Amino acid sequence: DTAVSQTPKYLVTQMGNDKSIKCEQNLGHDTMYWYKQDSKKFLKIMFSYNNKELIINETVPNRFSPKSPDKAHLNLHINSLELGDSAVYFCASSQVLNQPQHFGDGTRLSIL
Amino acid sequence: DAKTTQPNSMESNEEEPVHLPCNHSTISGTDYIHWYRQLPSQGPEYVIHGLTSNVNNRMASLAIAEDRKSSTLILHRATLRDAAVYYCSLQGAQKLVFGQGTRLTINP
Picture 1 (cartoon, rainbow over the protein chains, first blue to last red):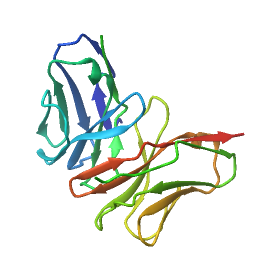
Picture 2 (cartoon, helix red, strand yellow; picture 1 turned 180 degrees about the horizontal axis):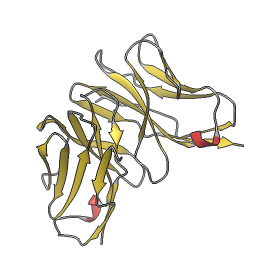
Picture 3 (cartoon, each protein chain N blue to C red; picture 1 turned 90 degrees about the vertical axis):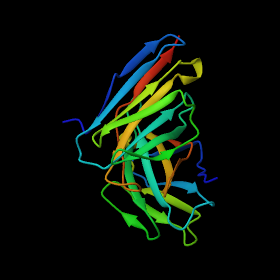
Picture 4 (cartoon, rainbow over the protein chains, first blue to last red; picture 1 turned 60 degrees about the horizontal axis):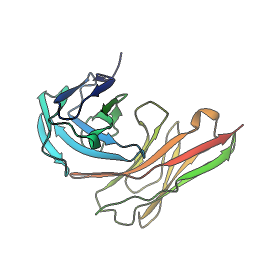
């Protein structure tokens, strides 16, 4: 039983397109996160939601919009994709903020 | 801005202890210190966390300096499966910062 699952695992698309990445957790956690990991392996927080409310919103272009329909799901929609958006995006969840996080396996986004 | 600093890489031998350092001089009083590790093509995996006191679990130990400006992750007997990138992280109210990670190589 996968605790944090992301789809798709790979996403190859062209510049200018709009795409979404979905994330679901079955751990009953209240807090969910989106991270971006670049080619140098730096891991940077993008957003965090607690019980469907946005609690962390780092300096991220407004082309990125998170949506949390319920506390088990946190999706990431990206408009007008750019070459610099190529990265691995990780979803994670924790019981509450500051508690251990469980990560998904990542979505590798490649922009052509 | 909060920041954590780690060595880029370290090497150790199998069955020997490993001490992975992290500097976090800008830590705030309510920030937790977390450690995660990441194997190739996988998401980060939680290892251990603490606030002020040293912590032990089945995977590792965490030693936190008295002034909390640095910490050390201790793997007591490294195995080949411990080869990974280890990230030190500060987590507090509306703050989540990861270091650049230390790539740990274990020699047989």
